[in-house]
Image (tube, rainbow, N blue to C red):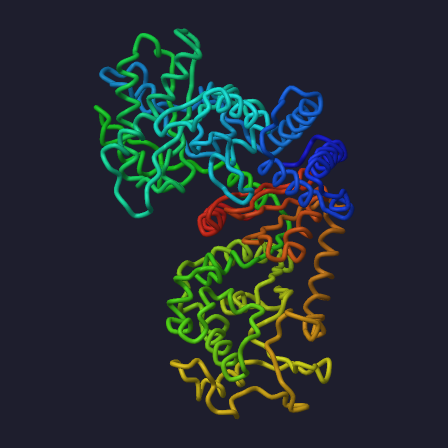
Length: 602
């Protein structure tokens, strides 16, 4: 989990690549002057994803860039990923099983397909075959191209330039794997459906063709051989292309089994792997394969990822725990500010009054309302989000965190601390000791003078809320009694919730908590550096809305030997090369539940 390659070498290589890409794109190098390592890696990722294939991939400049990116990706692969040997994955049935009907050549595996050392992995591509050009997309096409490097797009461009037409649905092309552990990548174009619709007969046949044409290509490439051959298929078309997974799985399995049966003499040493990323897809394959096997076969449940195993070890080995909670932690408990469904549940009629309020996040920074409407919405919001969420939670997310937290505290009081950018007071609502919780960005449970008239002009928001809600009209979302509009008890001026939204924010209200936290952290880091102790940072749901608050400081703390950052984020698990730790791209509830169940007292 700790980088063994000098971070200076990696950073120099990263900056050299970033400089080349910025220069050729017409951007100034000032973007790199004060950027963190993770910021520069994001720049490189973005520019490579949007970079068109070159007309001359053999030029000296292109080859120099390719070589540098290959080196970068190889460093990241060896230091950040556990490469899985496809030949060591167990098949559904033993080769010695009578009447196995092809299942002796089938394996089911849940994991990162780009970490698989196989003869070939299959890419669910689009018809242009050049990869995804949207940096934020987490589609497998984007992931494979990003991990293989720009040589892959150049190779695909040569194919497409030669054939001079888009790749038909159900067909496939093959290229080298370049920086991937796999020798080859097979690119196949699956059928694309309208979400919620059922596939036609033609679309089902096209999906089956994706599997058989891919197998045909690999057989043509490797020929008849006694050597081991392995190919891994992702769940083709079931993501953005909206093919129903429960229909896709039988089509995939049956088409592969039929193909293997037709090519027995040429494929005796072959292994075909159905690779899933999501547990629900793994379970669909598991159930179908078990129902199809000629003998009574029970496949193991979805395996625990190597990243999650590493996260558990980091927590298990630590002497101190620092929980760093972003918006994603509360979202995991159901309070998702980006969810239209959550907004409709708690504010079903608000869009009749404010049409732009699709999600709770829409209210952040909104100014086009008068005081009666503003306080009507805000007090209605905090009445459940800040003071009554435990009753509404959809998962015991904070119970998992509390169990992990208490394991450290029970063993060594004062060995755990929480910092959170969330203003929802969830840790307090869930029964955490508030003396061990540092709230960084404010608290819906407190209200301040808007001027402010004094550094201590801060009060509990509950009595103000209760007064206002006495005259709250749910049809208009307004506080109808002017006496319900908060006024500063000291100066009579306007008030606002204690939130870091502009320069009127009373930072002094959080200073005591920050001082306690800083003292705790300084003491822990001293023991880490001088006494060989270990600190685990369990970061959950910290993305890029305000990366400078939690995400980047955590990365820099994890430069320190003895500090491990466990980054739980299904969308953005990446970490800088020089940070010690592991990114876990999985659901927060599943990760926290697993760690809470398996971590033991040290």
